[in-house]
Amino acid sequence: MNTIRFTPDRATYIRTNAWLAAFAMAGAMAVLWALGEAHIWTGAVGGLAAIALRGWYLADEELAAEWELSGNTLTGPGGRTVRLGEIAQVRSLGPMVQIVTRSGDKHLIKHQPDAARAAAQIEAAVTRGHA
Image (cartoon, rainbow, N blue to C red):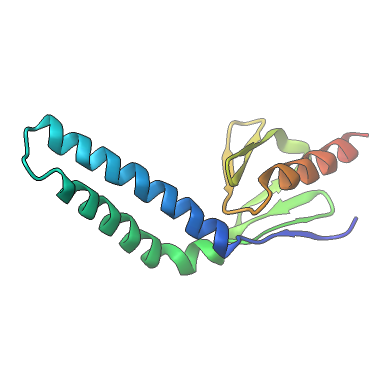
């Protein structure tokens, strides 16, 4: 079996953070409105600033988190290793792939440009391993 790498995509990372910023802006404005604040627009500024700072701060770490599918093992950052026979469920969640093991451990492969394709590749490898 060839080695397949799941490398985070910078454009997907930026797009994900843009959506997160939009939700944070709306949420902060809603809280300020509910509190009776006259200047609810400050919630938008705060939400945008918070997510922009978070995105900038975490970018190097998030974009370096590469997963590798080789043989009968899925290997991730921080020494995470999942044997294909231990995988109970694979599903795409937006730009992420969630791996759930039979013991209940969950792993995320984040910022994939085509999460459905990545999930299908892992699922196919799991199916081949059980054949």
